[in-house]
Length: 232
Image 1 (cartoon, rainbow, N blue to C red):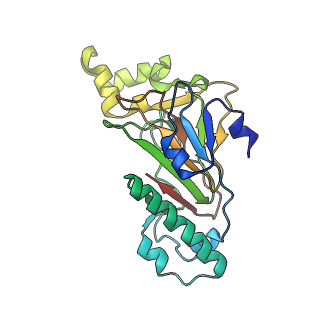
Image 2: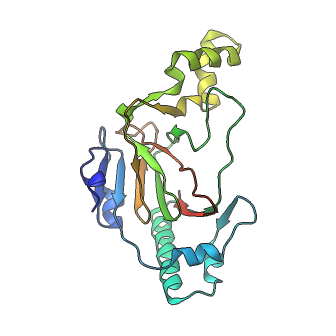
Image 3: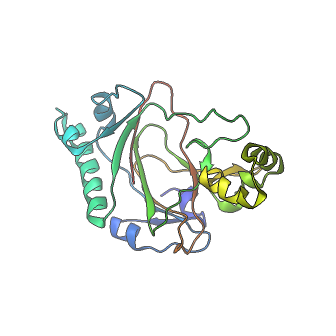
């Protein structure tokens, strides 16, 4: 078990799916990890599912149609089982194969794409589930190690100019365009990489949440390597 996980007050490490979904977030603890050392050849699956563009959603029938080695079949069974567990729980898992996400390059002073540290928001009680089976894995960072970008004076001033409207509508503007969801790491911040094979549950910003939402980001992909990840 990784000491990076078990010694971190932000993270609760569990050993089963039932623990993953039944453990409660509280205060600074907003990330739960079902720590796993998966067996099987996930790279073989990726090699037979190369996306035509930079992104493709892979469905169970796509996996089942593949001719795989024994090791590849073991990996496929793991993915299908994870999707079934999450579906039975009431989640809507999506298996994604990607070479990169689209970048937000519209504004040069603030980024709002998934490579920027951000939190997820939902109007209803829900959580984010995430597992990387192949390729670079996402990072999380403790809430006390980041600053909301809209509170950084020079960024806030530029956003006011961009808004160019009544002051009483400024906060609504920040929410409407999701600027308030993004964060800047503080100096000496120490992100935690989620690793390959672990199934994570991350706290989301919603009205009933008892903990701070988990700040996370997508990784910069390794050159020439696709990511295969389950997310919902």
